[in-house]
Length: 115
Length: 114
Image (tube, rainbow over all chains, first blue to last red; front, side, top):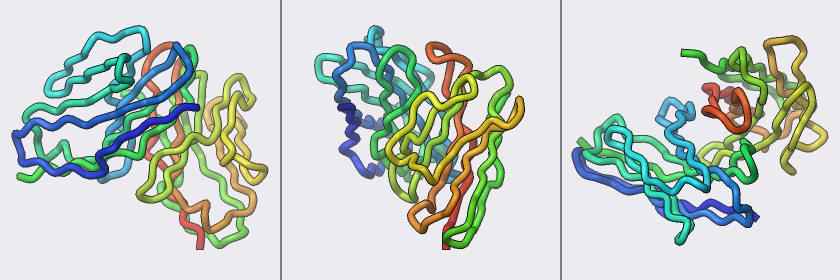
């Protein structure tokens, strides 16, 4: 059965600090996709990244970076030099199979960036 | 930028009433989804829809729920007889294909059942 664990329920950092949000997943499938979504206070879900199970390269996009390690079933998300606008709930999600988009979400990590 | 639009943004209804939530997916997208998020909890998959039929549904999506694509643009979620526990944010999502692109979510419809 699939499972996504975001052990950090809430994190607070001071602006300009780096912060890493952890995500550990479980799946029996060899083909799967991992996602991160941001949910700001306004409530919408903002897509950040999609990564398939065959692509273990780390990715950097501006201040955001992702570390995918199949050996530990983790897909961690780091924000460098955090800003107040980064304050949101961040969800990690998993979908199994080839291209399936029935996402299974983790419980989310609420990040608060203090000015 | 193309977007998924949902109406209404907020609906308040009495228990036992029928509710229809509407979504307009992105025009060239072929796969459509409904998710729900009970306040303060995680987002949960309800149903996926392709080629005018349900392709997968979760155990949450019981007989009280139905989906329809009545025309070429709208995608609706109907709850026949609402219960208190149906109070949640309902998100519609669409994607052009299962292997490509981003799963775009709408801004959500908040349903409050009294």
